[in-house]
Length: 428
Image (cartoon, rainbow, N blue to C red; front, side, top):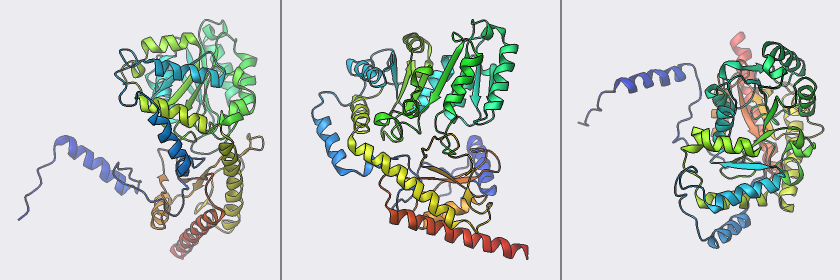
């Protein structure tokens, strides 16, 4: 007889109960050893430009590595032995690339956001954030010394933002008199909805009401770097607004298609975070191979080939939107629809994000259906997104073919028709 399994510990018993709760609530699982297929086409990764599918780029990277004297290891944390000439050189490179006073590199975008928002705010400061900012920004705010003075405003609502700024100036006179800071926290393009921040209008409101010595606008460009702006340098530079904000976080894990993150900020904030931010002080610095890879991928992002891929992402995104709208005209919105179609491009100035939140309250069912056909779909449900906005987040890429896009839409429609039919039968 097979040996019996050892009894669960108290910790494991509590974890089993939690996992069973996910199952009973029909919530998706994200186990680390689940590998999703993508042989039907990449419609879910963040490799917007499809750089990972370009074999000549792979060979160029290998050739670059072959010429580097240092590759393995990083020798320690940045505070001890992990600050090497290569790390400092990379930060200076980004300062020049973005034409800013100071750049700071991190192991990832999450770490960059956790560090900046967790340690830059000082006692007496106030944080005002868009309610849809990324979880990493929320996590940083929660550990900051301004956590009890952090307030959200309605997503992309200029009216609510203006009202909250006025309230804060009345409630916190040190901001009005220039002795404390009001942080305004945004994403340029929002990761879950694929919509654009009304960036210039937000900046105008901040400049109208907040004394310049008290205002600090911080923007995450995770889902715009690589896609917009000269050389793919982001939405702020696309619209010429980069000199009107104060700190910008550039995660390099999406269109740049590597690891790491860059914070552009002031020399004093760089020095302060270097000495006080625990998430930076005690994290092992990037290994040399990553330092080389970051610069390599950032330069690939600025090539003529990347410019062509950016155009292709936009063309493919418009095509998907058109085909999806046509395919779902007769489908009930709660079965399958594009979430917030009227506001997706409301502030885009003619641009389009390749992120499409496909709304359905049967997101787990849609995930299983797409997985069966070779798509790496992931259901995203409450509390990961606001209640009532469950979705599968589709992403269009530079190397998606028209045939792949048409096939993807057909598969989506087939599922939606099946679900709609079942709904009608259940009501009879």
